[in-house]
Image 1 (cartoon, rainbow, N blue to C red):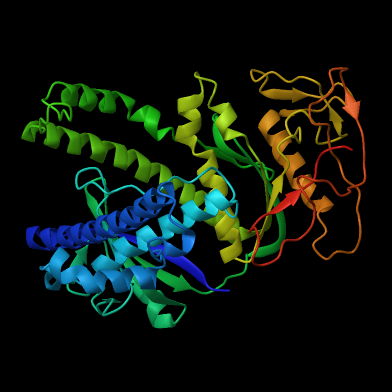
Image 2: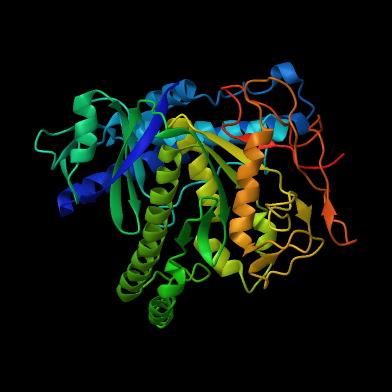
Amino acid sequence: MKTIQAYRFALDLSPGQERAVLAHAGAARVAHNWALARVKAVMDQRAAERTYGVPEDLLTPRMSWTLPALRKTWNAAKEQVAPWWRECSKEAFNTGLDALARGLRNWADSRSGKRAGRPVGFPRFKSRRRTTASVRFTTGTIRVEPGRKHVVLPRLGRLKPHESARKLARRLEAGTARIMSATVRRDGGRWHVVEVERCERTPARPDSVVGVDVGITHLAVLSTGELVDNPRHLTVAQAWLRTLSRTLSRKQGPDRRIGRRPSKRWERAAARLGRAHARVANLRRDGIHKLTTRLAREHGTIVVEDLNVTGMLANRRLARHITDAGFAEIRRQLTYKTQWNGARLIIADRWYPSSKTCSDCGAAKAKLALSERQYHCQACGLIMNRDRNAALNLAALAAEFDPAGSGPVAARGADRKTRVRGQMAMKREPGTASAGQTGTVPPQGRTADRVLTRAH
């Protein structure tokens, strides 16, 4: 199975190179907005004709939304729409058309019920000021130079990364990866590039099982006893962010109601604030990547919880700390990194009481306050850190999952909500249910296995 991995390199662009990249990003925006206007015009025309009573077979012909069709329509009209089109690579216009084609397809699939998740809105026009500048190259010369200090892209030429590209160059020379495309994107005042196709790996310990309990006091507590500290990057930078925000508020900003454009000082202050936020995000992303990469490379099976992060954010006292920890990002990275490394990710059911259940005897408490950091079992007398106890319970769930299909095995579970009668110890056999099915998933399906942990 092919795996696409992105290598992010910050670029040190000269003023001329930055103007060239901005021109390519602007070309992508122009192509996107022009094609979207054409699609909306055809849709509005057909809707108006229906109100006039025009039969369906006499309506204005439909406009295809596929990328080849949009590209063909653009090529026929680009001389009139963008007479300067020769100054930019064809990949710039293809970037905008591809984004529109994917947006229209997602919108149509969401309306018809083919796409799961939240409803997808109709694509919007891209603004020069509010849209993130980005352009993607899929054809032409894309390579890392032998000196490993420059990358080469079509029409843009030699670009200098802020750091050496030796890690990517080694993989390219060894044949364990090949460049599929390169995306140049501006993020927090920095330009970044590139993505490659990588080979599969196997974990260092294929038979190892680890339960991961994420939290705020510690970013992650492993069933092995390891405690991963929570660096709290946003909390540390909060004072500096407040200072930059106050400085920005004192400048003359934009006002769309009266058409006022921002002052140069406001733009510089906004750029400083954006860089500060980007630094916090980069620090958080770096720490999570190191943690998830290490787990996926070392352990053959990883068990995590299906947390209701949206519901947890309703607690206004903890919302900022929860978002700063990045619970959803940890699970997202584990999902694809376990697939990369040949490991297995098991997601416990959302209602499994991992913190309330004793990891020694299996008794479950009815209530466990958040302030109780030590788990004390009244049935067997176990005293343990509550997060370590939860991690051990998660690791024990791996025994309930039978990837070979050899039959049902003993399982531990709980009701949808823990009973209020006090201690509850129970065993059950897994079965089928409408939600949280137990079993392996096909290669084309989800990348994580789910364990059924409800009693029926």
